[in-house]
Image 1 (cartoon, rainbow, N blue to C red):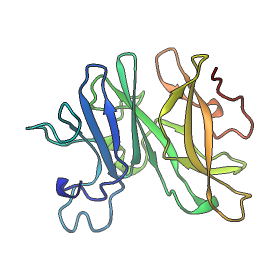
Image 2 (image 1 turned 135 degrees about the horizontal axis):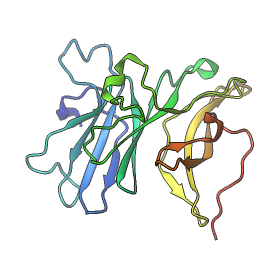
Image 3 (image 1 turned 120 degrees about the horizontal axis):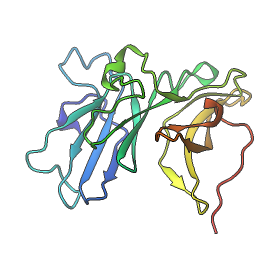
Image 4 (image 1 turned 90 degrees about the vertical axis):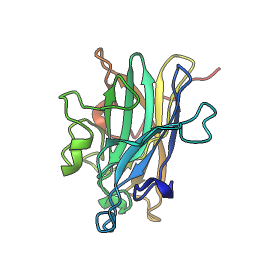
Length: 206
């Protein structure tokens, strides 16, 4: 992705729509040198060719989330596309402020917005308002973020994996966590209590 002009072009997420169209989402936090050398930053999407191996002729990258977000993952449910991303500091152990945000759109190209209508692009000041998972007050788990895809078990329940720091972990490595994703009647995802669980039911597969 070096020739895209987007700085910090990491964390790619391939998405294939139900109509067969293919997209690539990627990008990360603004690096201090990006502005100096004229590179764009943030999260972008571009439509791919029918075989998914190249950019579709004529397609141009579209910015879908701001310069303070990374770890993009897109999930389609019903008529909406949901863009999950992470904000905050990811790698400072118990001081990490990483958290997961989400926006949705009726198009894979956005615009992705929160329940209140705030654009994920406009969240560059760090006050994007659709935060669905953050560190718990007791600091058992800190800095949850950079989630993987949503997996549906054989009981129809959705689950999401992500990484987090366990404060009592002396080696300060990140743990792999999994929690159930719930949905409101109006179709917004959320986690119970909005923090990582310390005890939970497990997904069921036959």
